[in-house]
Amino acid sequence: MEEKPYLEKIKSPAVYGVVGGMGPLASSEFIKRIYHYHKFNANEQAAPFIIHYSDPSIPDRTTSFIEGNESVLYKRLVEILSNLEQMGATKFVICCFTIHHLIPQLPVSLKNKIISLVDIVVDCIKQDTKHFLFMSSSGTCKMKILESHPDWDVIKEQVCFLTPNDQKEVHSIIYTHLKMGIGPSAVVNQFRNVIDKYGLKHTIAGCTELHLLTKKDWSRLDQSIVIDPLDIVARQISGIAKVDHLSKKRIKIC
Image (cartoon, rainbow, N blue to C red; front, side, top):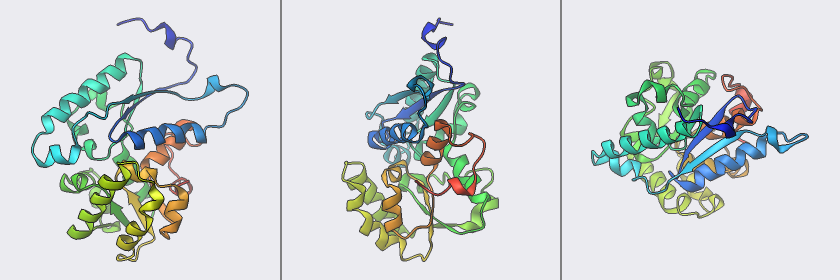
């Protein structure tokens, strides 16, 4: 094993490898939010140690899965995780909900280091009795990523999916606006038109681009609780919450 003397000075119990670039705006917002939440005291040296691997050239997940080209994605994901591991990462956060479809296929040595966004969503739903509207890319729906979770039978009565037409519209908003850097505030009314059809006040951000919406944006959508797994992980890494503790209080997006 190659020596990594620069790691010897790190006091943090974990080195977080963030797989970004899918898309880059979402993963960069995630990094920003970690440090925004972190309570800086006497020195910045105590802040979380993060290695951000952002590669926007990774093929589109929805297109790759629908066209049956997942082997290319798998190879790239293994390569990136292995590189992060070589750089000293002890935990991984993959900033793409759709590519979580590949996690069960990964080598155990890599899989065990992943903080799964899907696990976090499921755990949050299990802590509550409310019904949630699931909003995601079409790839996530097509691959049934949430429904493939081992605890799906426990939560399935609490999850409402979009109709095919509404799913197509949400996917379009994500790809033509959020991924292209158009401010989230510009698409609030479009999201509201979709959400209002379902009469639900609780939403699951099943696409990491939805992480770009702030608390202010979600409040304009009249949503009282939003399960945003990236926001929850950002709080955990920042030290606000333990990684293995998800209280209802922290489900609310900030």
